Length: 579
Image (cartoon, rainbow, N blue to C red):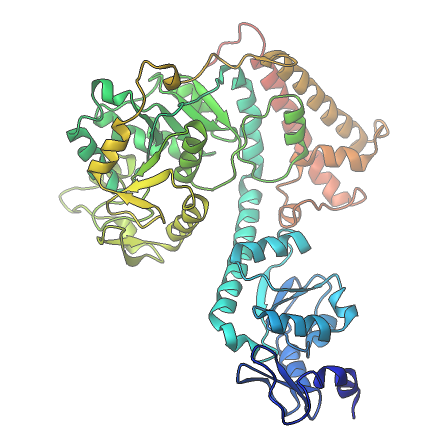
């Protein structure tokens, strides 16, 4: 008997004496030419024809370059796992998942203890996609792996093949999403932190906000918004007392749509960190519309509207400066990073009101003749492109990846993979909240209860008395805090951050030794290097302080940020005139 057979000889007898059939739900295990065969639920999962050699061959053929997550469905007796783990690179890992409780117990008792305790190995019975992705991040960290490789070392995957396929697809998607976020951080990380620091100078204009128990209508700029607004208008929702019974929260792209219909929003949600959305505010300078801005939004946006500002914060990565802002009571309310202004608007509405939240125009789809609602910037641009030689044409129709689908109301529409991803995220985030519902139309199903326009109008009109205390729009400007006025706290914070950068510059130029240590200074000033490609791809990791090339890149970032802190400090001085 070879070594493998001796190792598994106790397991091979678990199925009972030869010729007996184990009870239902217990795997039958018999000696094989090399190793053991496994039969379960009348299916042969490991054959008697040398199952160990077959698994080892499959493991050797599956080996990929570094930073690969090997996904092994139903490992059974663990054949081939040692080959996969020993021959893979040191920054790869092996994840085994078993969906059958009996087979999970078999694997836990059969796989070598050294393998089970190996830091690059994990065996789990998790079958939820989100839970498994979270397990991988907790076990090995975020943005560790570059690819997923499915390795079938046994026939056990056939018992629940669709489950394993779903889990593998979710892991692959999660890895791709993490690296997509890393590439966004490389390209925009410096802009995110620069915008956030500039917007700190506007915190004195921020005010607390609440819609009490009023219902909230959240509008995106999808084509279905036209029908929804027209239906609500016919029922008098935007006139007199009825308008005051609900709050209207819109995304920035909706402003021109609402202005064209003489509808004033209670809050405009702005997320964009670049200048691309500036056309959304054409003709709206000093309109005094209240705005909810992400701290990393394009800084001039709040100045354009000129109205009250409600800041919130969606962390794009982990930075120590965020903790220091929180300690100084300068960090706005934190929202999860959802990536889409429509999703962020719904999340804000849920937090600002205890009443129903009804969405309209958050479609994640478009029709052949419209990508957005009428009078939106995209629609106006399409009209402006029309001339005697070129008719109305929707360029989104020929965009790569566009596919045909059906809306929640049975209307044929178009969508693309990016929109579909946001739709799936919307369903994951909000479908469990019974307060959130949407209005029928040409948008994709969001996993919510869908209302007719009549039902939506009835819910919105049932809001509290516009003059009642529970309908208060908010409070005074947020000028006071536990440590004094916001301006005083901000000045002290700026002085501390400037001193940190000046000390780091002095250390890197050799003018003075580091009082707290170079590594500590680098970690505290992590916003200088978090967007570097070699750092953005592995959150929380950076080259050591002895890496001269890294230190040179950090040194190049210091002076621009010191100048930025100086300009922000000037804006906090009395009498400063904003443009």
